[in-house]
Image (tube, rainbow, N blue to C red; front, side):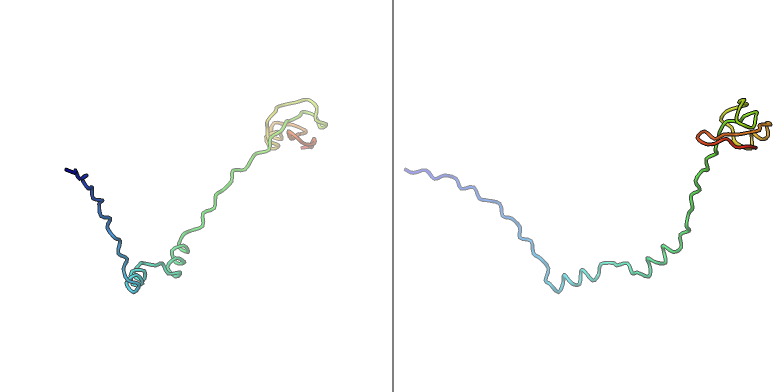
Length: 99
């Protein structure tokens, strides 16, 4: 007497059916497209934004005498030095200037 082995059937894989070429073209045509005219009108309505850059105030040293001798104060602007009664002013990296 012979014994048969049990046969395990493989599961069937579903076949993917592609639509016909004529139907594929119809599907592509139905997809929404943006026209160039619509894009231009939307972008032209936005206002141009200008960002202002903060200005740096130039600071230096204020001197009592005209040849940059006798320090009154440091880290001060040229106009502030003039108000305090300084005779000369010098930038952090610069030449001596008469006021």
